[in-house]
Image (cartoon, rainbow, N blue to C red; front, side):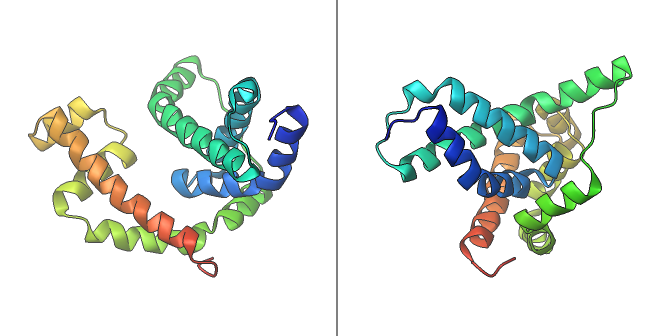
Length: 180
């Protein structure tokens, strides 16, 4: 399959909603997910000549991999970006409530929230606390480690294990057709 601009546009039309739901389930923020998917398609467009797959399924898998990478980049820079906007006194444009609700419905967040809450409660206490401090309080690993009285490496491991377990719950929800 040649991944030219036309083919990529067709994939955007066909797979954009699935990619948006995928990103929204991981961020719980429809607006952020929309930004991530937009950035992912921009990256895909820039790198379309490097695509080596031969089928549509391989192209879709490639797009999902790019979205995953963009999510990771977004998590890393999100805190710094927010602090910079605060320092400058700039407000980020916001998505309309109807748009947000539509994306959240597409992602099935209403059904996913209680599942994740339950899964979070089932994590070992040390992982629960590490995930809360990293994700909710947005602490850097060094500060998180200091607060918990552990090494930064141990803090990273606890957060990683906790997020991996929560990610498995999301995967299960995505595999069940009537989960939404």
